[in-house]
Image (cartoon, rainbow, N blue to C red; front, side, top):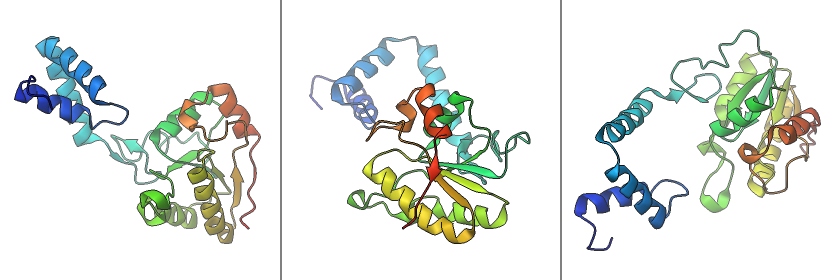
Length: 203
């Protein structure tokens, strides 16, 4: 960090630059904004960060992030318990919920299989999913991973694992652009992809 930044400012910029999607210039802008802002706003932000860090946990059923266990969705008795949608991360749950077309439950993997990045099935919440399907009366699992190389590889891997359990395994349709992210898709596109899901051939 250049010497013309005060040590405390340099540290703030360095910490902010560790956030995903935040480069050095963006980190500097954020740091300057925070330092010039009202002390109560900065304190409120710090308290919100610490509160989230200390209270947010993984739902023991679906692995989504929550501050109560089970999470609000898993605890909603009006949702279909025989239908589980598997997604990469919590932001995908938000995207699916925005469609208002899905009334089942979820399972969050917290990543995708990516050998190049050293991420294998053991680093994901795959075992939790298998345990859940063996215990619950799930009839269909929708694989809603992104239409990327990693997303497709993860979907195919899961399909091979799930077939012997006797559940129907489907994949969201190709309404999503190749290589796109689920949480960036609009509600109409996601709704079409969900309604047009197809049975997965596990090979």
